[in-house]
Amino acid sequence: MVTARPEPEYDLLVITGPTASGKTSLAVAITDRLGGEVISADSRQVYRGMNLGTGKDYTEYIINGRTMQYHLIDIADPGYKYNVFEYQRDFKKVYHDLKKKKIFPVVCGGSGMYVDSIISGYKMFEVPPDSGLRAKLEKKSSGELTEILRSYKTLHNVTDIDTKKRIIRAIEIEHYNRFRSEKHSQFPVFKSLIIGVDVPREVRRKRITERLMHRLDSGMIDEVKSLLDGGISSEILIYYGLEYKFITLYLTGKLGYDEMVHDLETAIHQFAKRQMTWFRGMERKGTLIHWIDGELQMEEKVEKVLNLLTCS
Image 1: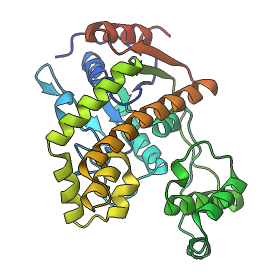
Image 2: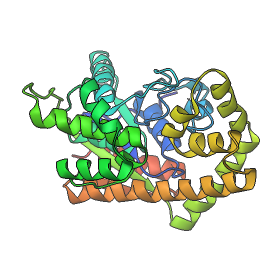
Image 3: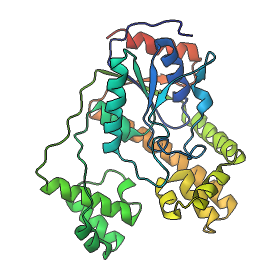
Image 4: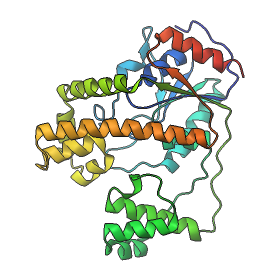
């Protein structure tokens, strides 16, 4: 039951932070207080049937005996490669629908590019496949492709170059961007309050390890196996990264069980570090993120956020 509904001074509340920081439970508690609805900003929770590996916990959306409404979760089939352009498109539709109903939107997620795309209003455009360019690039090595990509832009992260297909797609996008004549799509400017939830590094590491073990015990390997058995290629699952990458390598005999668990745990810790690096980069570019201690009691965290939200 909604116990308080202060009038927000913002168009949008964003709850973000690294993995295992507790952002979802905080977002749900605040959404309950506001009588709002949650819009996910998670690049992998968009996929149906990918639950344990992406950290979906539907029970987290149940509060005070009712299920909080959420959006942009389970909207794409596994095997599809959902992207930022589509996220902006889908986000705008949900946002405007909620505003028409006078429902306050609370964005929750740790995919930095998705979060930044709506806060900063990325000027996005849909890039069609270029079969001719792809055919030429396929003949080149990953090293050669990386150098071609560097000729288009400065490489700020390794996401675009961790597989040959990703490098080719990144080049395709940059090539299109350089020579296209179409205008960028317009994205609305929001007055956003951005809350970052963080916990001490050692606490986060402990949570990551415990959560990984729990998910493995709960059937995460069976989830990946069912995706493979359902026709999703190992290449696609590896593309999704983290749990899907390493468990697929285990199931296809590339890694032993203990090696898989060790490498996956290490990769998740590294991922959390990269998330924080992304958020710090947003701050350097001028985005104001209000960081709060994820170890505080829930009511204290909620009150801190509500106080910020209603005082512009």
